[in-house]
Amino acid sequence: MTEEYLDSLLDFRGSDRFDAPTKAALALAEHMTDHPDREVADSLFSLLRSQFDEAEILELAAMIGLFHYTNRFNNAFGIEPTI
Image (cartoon, rainbow, N blue to C red; front, side):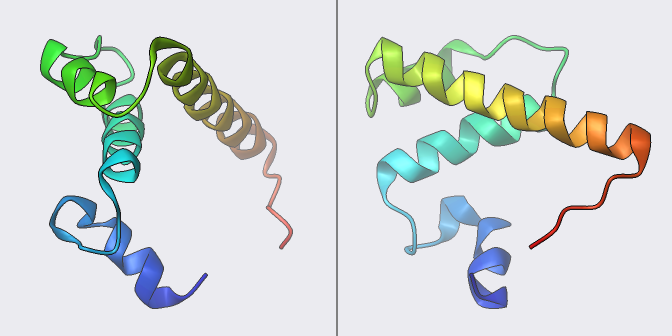
């Protein structure tokens, strides 16, 4: 993964690097990261449903949540990722 690719994630909505399903998944990840205390708005669910079925949306949310859990656990114990 290049630095340029990672930088493009910051403006994924305006980037032509990502297709519509990827942008929808990134929007869900962004929402779950920035607003862990808020439900997903109907407009975001509509966007997700235009790209994924219900099972896929649940799987996306589960994976995003799992990574949040893992990151918080690692941060609590000062565990650094190994690449």
